[in-house]
Image (cartoon, rainbow, N blue to C red; front, side):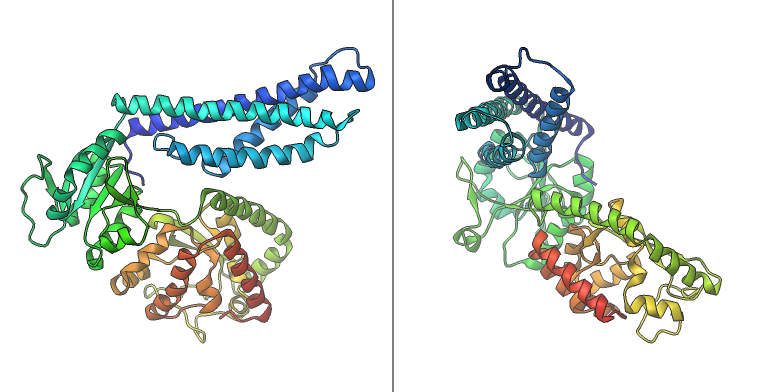
Length: 477
């Protein structure tokens, strides 16, 4: 859960709606001018139409165009973090969307117009694209300027926590103060991560606690940003801290060591402060949104088309007198619990003695259940989990808290799994398969971590193809 204060949350939503409204009006206006041009100039010249009619075609066309434009801007993430935008990146991305949208709009909606000369096509396209361009760019500039002005006037601020060693923070303190002033950050205090930490202030900033108190402080102070100043060679302290902050949803910046600066991964802000932002999401917004749309479409289609098979399998499972479906709590993105659905493949009371992992020759598995597991048909009800947003088609398999805690004790890096939605299938399931012990879970996790580090919509397609082949071959357990 994000630590953002309720007031700042409302402000961010208000400005998000302002951006959406501006883009909607711009596309509506562009279509209105295009419609006027076509009906008052192009069509009278071609067909002798006496007057322009503002009919339902105009209403539906304008609303459809505006909706598609807002959807395209949202797909690439231009409505995310409305108060914390990089104006240059925003303009660059908006121009890319404008170019692609204008070309596609011309091909699908304007190219079939009846015109006397090709110049009519270019006039229509130029009028529409030009209006959309002017309105979009002016909106980004005006709204961005107003937000920056209000930030400088401290109409809204972003509580920030400094976390790290006193010596490193002291070295960069002047730059940190200037950075905070220009970006609307309010330095709430600092946390000393050294083993024998003293509680003395840092340049009048109060020392609020140690690394064990990070979660409580972030939530209590509604911290938006955390700036870390920990030597890169101290991974035993740095990694768990980053993982915990990721779960909290704060923006994470790091004052890098010499290697980080030389590697070219670090940006230098306007005050000469070297900062590296830690990106929480492994996928770009457009890929993440495309993935979600694909999840919705495919899961809905699968539930519809496979409904006869699901009914047959449910009746087969119920032959032993028990229920067809099995419901179990698992941990999803950001370690949030949810109920996963599966076809029951074990006899009733299989875990009466407590949570147990299954094995290939597990006597608790029923005859029907063994068949379901071989072809992974027991996972089919999870299309419902995908449809409602608890899971994705492709992603690391979710585990129960009982086993997740055991994995974390041996492999703290397992927390990286919580960065993404769990899935019906995963790279770990394809390359390793089901796990019957915590050690096997950890080995399978290694494949899933590789997937997360290289996560893309196209890699999801690759995993899906491998999964289908695995099912056809019956190589499940």
